Image 1 (cartoon, rainbow, N blue to C red):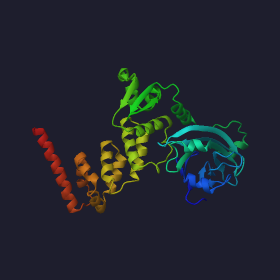
Image 2: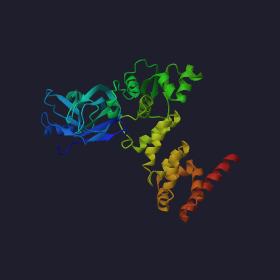
Image 3: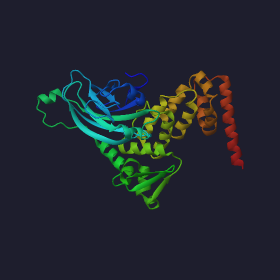
Image 4: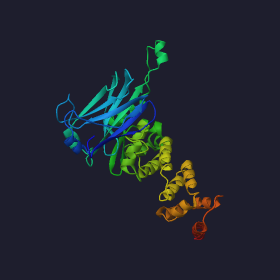
Length: 370
């Protein structure tokens, strides 16, 4: 392995159909240290009961001339024979979305057999995909599992897993037949009315209902960032998050996506974001996350926050965070729930929370008297 550069792999799903995001750190250094035909390899990962690795050749392999980058997906299980798989290879753009996916079906006859993808070195180095000498690629790998018992009974037809998500992903990529355009944060996004309407009753009302006449041309969406809407569209078309699993989806993006999913009633995406945030609750963020959970009816996320705050030390630390002031202003009802719980609350914390509730009550009374 070359010093100062590495190849890492992150799993995106856990089934016979998985996506592997491979990040190459230190592309230029790898070019300088490795000769033609030499490669770096990712850690092994498992799909369909077999181990796989991704090999990255920065100066091409023995079969391709110089000026090309070669990536190979390699079967790494010693006892595997004639493994059938569908692979989708794509380079990841700056927003984490796959660009120009290439799909191939392949039979891997034995350990060490591989499928190869190539792209021009100049095209990568002149693009925005190479950031800070790093870039990422994605393999969507579907392995057809051999059933020994079925084979003994002369199974002549093998039915592959559904690839509906791939077809809709290609539709999003090519935008063939797109009939609506959105303006979000200064960027334009094309889409298909029927796809959006089928996935979201909110989009259905806006694009096919009585409001349709108002949306015959450009539809402007306010209070949402462009990269969040782009990710939302990707999920609507493919039912997956773009080029990343929940481990690489940061807390801020998960928060923005949760708001967007709630706005358009994309329930599965909302739950994915809730799950992400549940795993990243700490004393500095819990107040902000609790406001988000309360405002968007995220019951599981709220329960996780309240459980975290059952610890007196966590509660006291939370009260020194910037998010606590936001919590007091936005969700005084949550403060009342904290006070009403049977678990003990430090006296100083209880006094502060009671005072915050009293101030909010005075504000409400004053507003009614005006």
